[in-house]
Length: 536
Ligand SMILES: Cc1cc2nc3c(=O)[nH]c(=O)nc-3n(C[C@H](O)[C@H](O)[C@H](O)COP(=O)(O)OP(=O)(O)OC[C@H]3O[C@@H](n4cnc5c(N)ncnc54)[C@H](O)[C@@H]3O)c2cc1C
Image 1 (cartoon, rainbow, N blue to C red):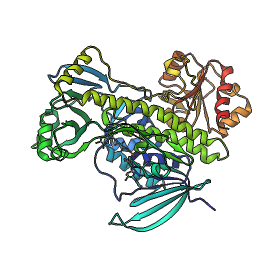
Image 2 (cartoon, protein in one colour):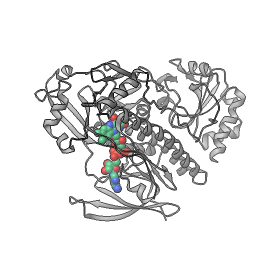
Image 3 (cartoon, rainbow, N blue to C red):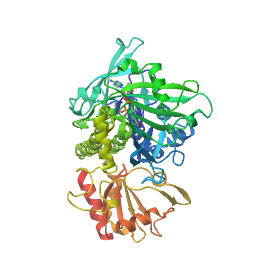
Image 4 (tube, rainbow, N blue to C red):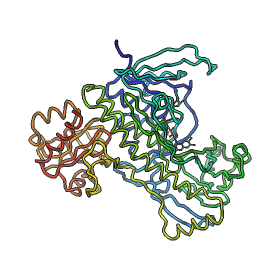
């Protein structure tokens, strides 16, 4: 029997659409099912890290996102430093939130308008032949061993009664179906609730209706968290054309009251923002638990995005972590589809272990930050402020390192120079090849890449069987910065990295993490061989 699809993706949110584009680019037959007839047209996430921006550039969607202003580079226009202040406006803590240069060769973070990002992703799916079936709900999935069977219902105007039902088949199913994931439930993948929701936040997006109005609003060009127990609140300069404010809803206030026009204008009035020069684009009361799926992969099913984890908004990780999941999962599914006879279940299990490792860190940190800022009791607030003055640091999880055991050569209890530790994010910058200058991913392409400095002859560093397996099994690229290698290190950043790390070659995974490094030309064969043997 022929199987209809390589991968069925449930949910056309940003994580589902990105996963679809990644897998389509790798040559697979992908289909997306989405319950809603239309995209959700309201802002939610307001920034993306450089890691997500790098992925969008490699996917060929970033230029359009920048042109349509769905993505904006605010470095230099908005402060890179976020400030925590007490009720009197005195600084308690400063946090570096952005920088001119990240590991990806761009600013560290970019402002986004989530509906605009989703629009570009879905348009690109259509242009590239990925079918996105809207008004179609996935009701159940069943693992039949060699493939999955997916039950779908076409929804009419009356969403309760389907106009038709059907089943389709796929080798793999990816659940990008949000917090109440049916994929997670159908596959009996458990959910661990780290902590229940403990505070409610009124999240408001405001757009100016009069030119120049935004410049009159307080804290216009710097992220600020105001730890005033009378009303904990924050101002997030989200985009040049809109602004995000967040206000804690106090325990004695009802959600219904907090959603009224009167309440919203009273709140944003604290930032000198008024209804005669501004309009409310979106308001919602948001209260969120911290938790994660006990596993992100089981047999032929994987989870990504909100289906796999939930955290309060304070670290801005919801969408960013979902996009990391997509990138980390896609190359493993690609391997599973190309080499069904090989050890793909081990790779899917690594996807789960690695992403769970990062997830636990940011969920726990986001909940800890919530406990510090959602304080409405004056005495408790005074104690907290005193702790800040005594040097209390906010949790800053390292989200550029997969950290736990997984597919990399990092050994527990071994000290590595931070720049070249296996399992950490590798750098990218501009390089040159045959007169073409561009970012590394756009010049070299996607996939595994073995990069060597100018002292190495990569052709001589590996035996023929290893070179062949590297190319066939891993689809790997060789990049040699030697005179004969043909690649130019335009910015000098790679030379600097090799010199700082004191290694001669690095093997980088398709999701930009370091697999392992070689100290001498002789070590290169062993590093590459270990990656091949791991999945053979
Ligand atoms: C107010 C607010 C502020 C936020 N701020 C930030 C921020 O600053 N930074 C950040 O990174 N994140 C933020 N987030 C979180 C971010 O928006 C989400 O993490 C992100 O949208 C998750 O994307 P997703 O694709 O995983 O899930 P979703 O966007 O939830 O998409 C899931 C999709 O699956 C569909 N679906 C569900 N079940 C089925 C089914 N059975 N069949 C078919 N389709 C189905 C749904 O209709 C939906 O379209 C915020 C969220 C909110 C609400």
